[in-house]
Amino acid sequence: MSSYEKGWKEVSIAGVCWLPSTKYLTGDWSPYKPVRDKAKCNKCLLCHMYCPDGAVIWNSKAEDIEFNYNFCKGCGICANECPQGAIEIILK
Ligand code: SF4
Ligand code: SF4
Image (cartoon, rainbow, N blue to C red):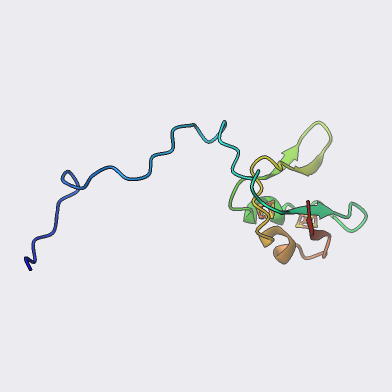
């Protein structure tokens, strides 16, 4: 067997996403979603910072956070990092 390794130009194209991320809803397959207890939330925005999918949004008009379930994958990181215990992950 040869020890030759292919260069990147010789490797065939594998998975290609054919839609921009704004149109490919990466959260629609998840069975879980976060819900927030507004009474416990102090709007520290840690959930916004920790969300790997940008699915916790600051709504400047309402001056409050909201979840974008189109892109939330229900990973639970926001619930884990919330210092107030204000987020619960539930079945959709
Ligand atoms: S991390 Fe918790 S307390 Fe902070 S904004 Fe998010 S839900 Fe509210
Ligand atoms: S569950 Fe995960 S993807 Fe959804 S808002 Fe929380 S951190 Fe973001």
